[in-house]
Length: 316
Length: 179
View (spheres, rainbow over the protein chains, first blue to last red):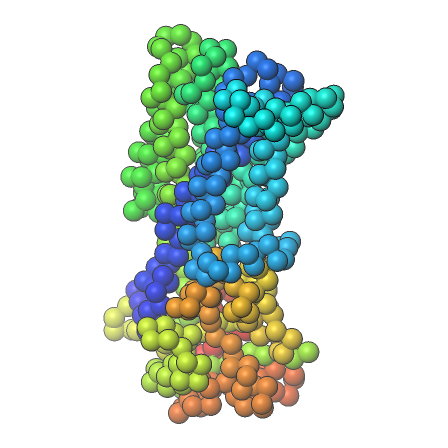
């Protein structure tokens, strides 16, 4: 028998840590999804296929700016000392993933804007003459569009991985303490972004391509989740108990039903049938993928805060 | 440079909470918040039970994850004794340091910044003990330089059985408990 009683009752700390509410999971989800969108856009631009792509190049960067701004607003709302938000940009702390993230986010915006200029939507070019002017300038250089595409891919990978590394770097929370959270969140972001293109693209070829890509992303995501859990259950008792929280504990229903079932397994099956032309392409699978991506962040952020090192030191 | 640490005798501590009250008074800790607290740790099977009473706080770790994760440079290691402190004016309240601490020793002050035990460095700079150590009625708490072979804390650690909290978390805590 072990009973530990503390007289401490600090808000947000006791009885279990709950410092991050809806804002951080929403930000991590939107950041990951925008990262996926940048990689997809960058792929088309870098390969010189931006003229073939109606959605990935003409719409994704614009949607990306809006979604990232919503995510950053959520992040801002989470800060407890909001008037000091600028402090993150008064320094660079190389050991802090959050500091890396702050600066990556600052670099992401100009690349998204440059991506918009590669293939600006017609309605935007009509309304803002400067857009057409700058777009023509970019295309005058033979290598600049490709450089923008490569930068979009590179920053997308950095942004997507950082959202996972941010949590993975917290050794004090066993559920988060895995280097696989970076690739997992990147793959989840890619699958959500591909699902968005699958859902809104009007060009059949583009839709088919991204639906096929999404099958690969979801399969890889499932594999990384498996490796992540194997890593936890073969580690210390604290890590095994942390894994138990999502495998069979209080977060298990949300994890199995929303993350694995609705978020990955069902859309994987539906999309596989759709690309084989057994069923029609519908928004159902993409919507489930996006919902599953959001739920993944909620489950990991919530359960991770509740996971802790066993207070095993004591009586010897 | 000195390396300040604390040694607490669990065989003498009675859990009177004088240290808690002294800390709140000395540091104007807001109502409902604690920089230090008492842990009652009971183990065994009835009737063979053992209880350890501990006065706990920030462990001012040698490898403080709360410092390395801070994006603003607000969490830092003070030049005086390697005490871990927070520049309130630099803190954005992102709560990364709270997530990084395996001891849950930090909290968000009602004004918005991260707050925690300072080892009463303002008193130590004047040659005084931290408030919690100074008021302890059973003299179970000791403060000093862990790198000084003649300090009371070093001699106690050499002569008595002791343990830190959660050494497996790898942060190299500097608060030790004599058992």
